[in-house]
Image (cartoon, rainbow, N blue to C red; front, side):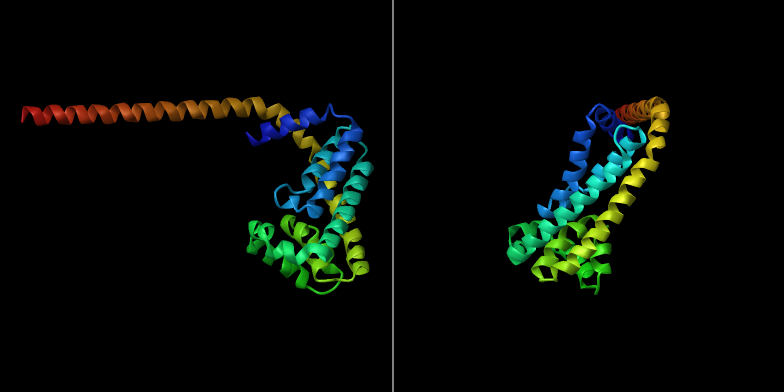
Length: 218
């Protein structure tokens, strides 16, 4: 069912203009940290689909990477500024409690590591990359250091995520070829399970009926 759903989404996206695809690839990473939406929807989802669409020649691969990297850099910068202005209130307030202390803890552990590598590595774990910019801003990390790590991490992340989708493009063709067979196999399995359950229930009723008749004769 998962692959069928993913294929349905991809089939719909194949008919979407390339400008719209690039806008989505930009917006998903941009809103990830700036609005904390990445806690629910990881930003690389759009880049993975963008990479697959690039394999189908529906959109240029370089444009997908550029849009994803730009969205990540701008979104994280906004998240940093939000952290500078409202970070403590968000972490200690209702939104922070909804996100959960465990997630904040993972983000803090990433931020606790010293140096530029902190921001670069913090770009890859889905929840951490959403929360690290806000925590960096609230901790008053120097913006020039944050920005450098943000740019390097955003570009590397965009290349990796888009490439993963691009090189997986051929797999979608294989899914197209086997999805009907897989559907038939799943349907047959469901039918077999239902038949087995019905037969078991009938045997149980038969044994109960036999037991009642034996008790009555006794």
